Length: 223
Ligand code: TYD
Image (tube, rainbow, N blue to C red; front, side, top):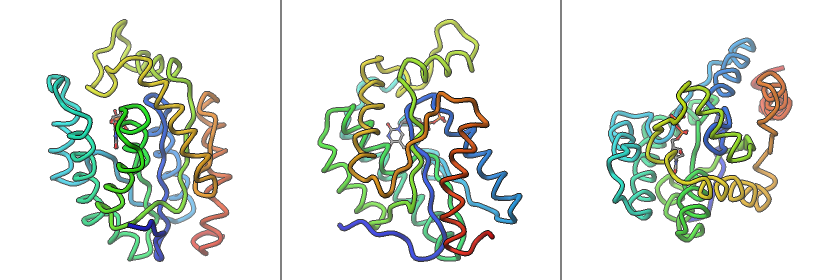
């Protein structure tokens, strides 16, 4: 299936390795949009629907050490199909701004580049699952694997964090995640905006806003 951009509202995804600070930055972006009178729809992956949250529990449960990467691909894409059908597409059709905490690129990178399944096939399966929908803009919060995992540890304030099943993977896996995102971003340079997530929170937020603002102005959503 060929990728297509939406014709209604604006679809923005935020991607990056674990610990890049996506969730905090998405919250800051949502607040900023609100200051401009825009109420954005925020979703998270995997999850964001009743069915998706159930799938999330299976995917992130540390006890399922036997899960194959192909099983992961299909579960993530199943949750995503539901999220697009129930939440994202209707919101875009009604002209809203949708902020998505991870999307198809996370599968291409985590299960493909880092998980050693074919990234091209993963993208194809996912494009089928989401009816070809890709974000108008993807913000890549780039951070070294070590620095990202360190942040997660500090956040949890424990010396040896348990983490969820995906976070428990080896450092080498997380390095491939960072490299995979950068590779994807270079292949689709017009969709991606790479931001250095090692900067302080406010600086990262400013960089995101500088990138997103013209897009929203172009669509006449803000002045
Ligand atoms: P994450 O956004 O880090 O959730 P939280 O901030 O709630 O911990 O996502 C959870 C994990 O799922 C993360 O390690 C990345 C992984 N993941 C994939 O491997 N493939 C995917 O398609 C998605 C959406 C996430």
